[in-house]
Image (cartoon, rainbow, N blue to C red; front, side, top):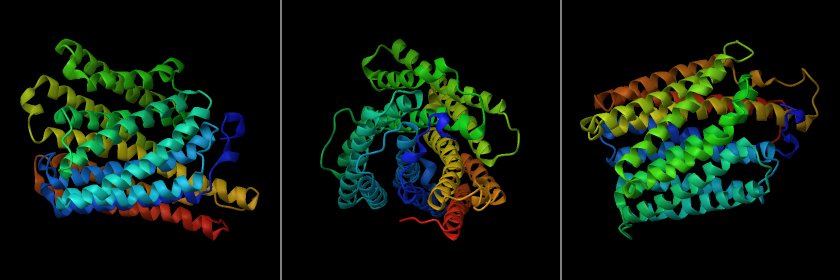
Length: 426
């Protein structure tokens, strides 16, 4: 984690800028847990108002919030290209994303067009500001596998937002886009695979070897995987225009690429140089196992049409991908990024000598991270049963709420130690 590793830490943004994203995200996760506990029928179908509100609380409020904060930190350090007008971009995108996500969730729950309209405008402002700034940053960045992965992920995000706006206008009764079913499928595909998965792929090339002390990803795989997955995703979105055989080949290739990434990550983690217990590694392993399970569930649906048409299939797939894979990996990254940034900025601000400030491992107590992981794992297991037994949602939502609350407290503990040892957030 030095300059010799090709990382430009001197260009890191002030700690307060990404931190506001990281501390806001668990609040939406707490809301998601409470919603499941109070409305256990929310996951009985993908189309219930509660299910739609829950999905967007997780994807916009939690995942996107953390991922934008992480990109704000990574683009200057990894790509050597800070976002222009960084402070304004952080303030506008964070506030618009938080308020816009809340408004859209309220729109799903109440059905009021005004809430949808507010959500569309606010989310549009927040994402456009960030995407334009990130595009400028990426255009100036040196080429590399992580930068290329981020570029494809940002394209996936842009397409997700465009399709999401069209669908929100539909729900508000203001416009009916053509091919609604295809637009919904494309919105889900670009959001989950084109944005979330491809960003995890790009970030993994950097953070897995650096933080988990594994060998690097195979150069050939890291060069072509993100681009190949994005191209396959474009073909998947155009599946209605393709011959059935070609569409099946595209889908099978897309599933194979996802499985290859998960299997390669698990193999590299098994070869890490330091075998000490690491809760963040457990989060990544849970994420990769859930990603493999989600592909397996999808494969069963392709072979068994009755299962694909059931009400339980979409929620189960969403629980595995969003909760088991994405939320696990993102939480694992938070437990590395926030302590590292607290330590790094404390050292930079105070010009501290070794031993005079807490180490990275001291920023958040390992035992509390481990307890939160157990709650998260328990919530994931309980949630898997909710599509089949809705009343299990009361317990699952309660455990998820406790897990999210403890995550928030753990992150705050790192901030308290940072401030307590003389660090400043201004």
